[in-house]
Length: 414
Image 1: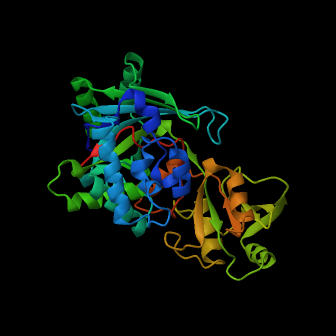
Image 2: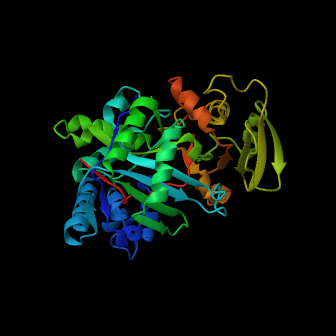
Image 3: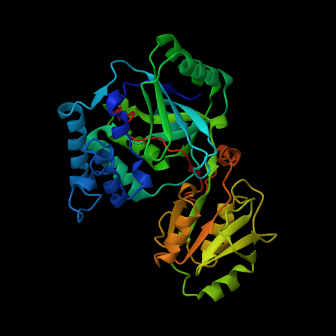
């Protein structure tokens, strides 16, 4: 059964919470981070993307970047008195509300439990995975954690519904005042409650011990893998044997599409490429951008034009992985036609989260940076569970969860 623990979070004083909280380090590049943190010296981006405080020519994976992150973190604790460490181990309830006008939002609210999860559970596959990871991205987070001795990136876990857990969290929310409650610049409402009652803490721990056999990584495979490897390098640290997670019951979650852009057509013209696609897809022109409305339907943006692609019979199998649209496109387009064998390492392909919208796909192609873009119908949470339970792996970057937890509100010191 799943082993979780309360922890002494390093967190901002309430008056600083909104300024400190930042988007996750891996959803924005250095230039975007510099813009977001401009004129905000206590943004947590100064810790998670500390290259923004160094000359632009600095290698973002160099030790000087990690050293600057440590310096910035210590300043927020000791010099500026912005961050403090909780006196006792606590659980935390984290609620996010996305306004209806945002892509995929529909006014959704989702509530999860912030805790630390056992690294042993990660190695024993009680924490289920569905993606491989990229070695260079792991190395970056490993060096970051080892240098600053903290886990700043929250691993987003899912679990099957447990009525008792839902009830405990809802009751606490109704009966207690949150320590943080603010609307971020992107209009996502972030609300956090501290669960500090010993009886309730014990009850939550017991629920997981008795009712939750597995948790599933929804978002954060690299953060989890990095934390697991760091634990091996810090055997003397009991805290390093656990890593920062937020666990959401499946009834709280929705998955958005995770789209693809490709740099070149493997030597083909656009017309030749479309001709190759006709072997496996029905292709029709679309006068509007294509957000697929059903499984096995894709959008394609090529030479300023949108197309609808529909899989022909025989282009996919019935197994949990083969039936995924990301698998269909990988097998019949990226691999077969474009010779992209490994999406984890091939620099010709990149990934665009659905929250960025179809305009982002058009922008990447129209700029000349990329040659073609593909939009997807989202994977379902049940598909994710089925694949992980069967020990299978999705193609990389198959799922995009939104809204995102903010970095800096709750940090785990190791």
